Image (cartoon, rainbow, N blue to C red):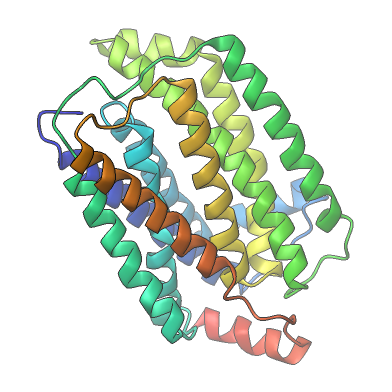
Length: 314
């Protein structure tokens, strides 16, 4: 870990704040658009690019992703990803303030517990550099990434066959959540791979050349592009209370488990700090699972869907 152990935690919080604020802006913009069909990519992309409000949210999300590359150069996956996952709590808060969605008592407790998990992770920082991995075996990365991408696309195939529209059943949101979670998890692995380029080069030219020639750049672009299109259609068609937590659960668990193993990162040697680290990770995971189970059992009626869209546009 870096000499300033809390700098990475702070930057990770800034990253997830920018990313998830952008997500809320996109959600509000999508409420004003016609129904998106992920099978018609050109029309979908055209609708998104024609919306200045959506572009503003997208730019903020890109800023968050750029910060993620930086923070992964000096912080281990087991610290960064749970902090990034805490953005789900921010989504719930902003959904209440911006989209006028109700924050229930259980969700309010989850927000408090997620904040506690971030504090535990910060306290587990020990100031060493040995536990941050920068490089992984290309063969093992391919063996993990390729099946994960194929599985993500396969899971997305089911809701894609359904008729496009707003507020489909919770099962649709779960499928999209699992699919986008896997794709974003793979993108996070590629981001971690690119972070190794930053750590191994000390000049602007060296960094630029390393990034352009790295296969991780193209894995990141492909997975983010596919996940982005799926996520936008899902945001419009499904409840955010289903999609966002499920997608975050899948991507977080996938990235922490696969990333820690592939990049040979070690947990803290101190039993106290190890306990704090594991408690923070476990608490974040439990909160995300609880949030994913807070979704209503039935889809909104068309009339309710129209009211929700109007509320999101306010």
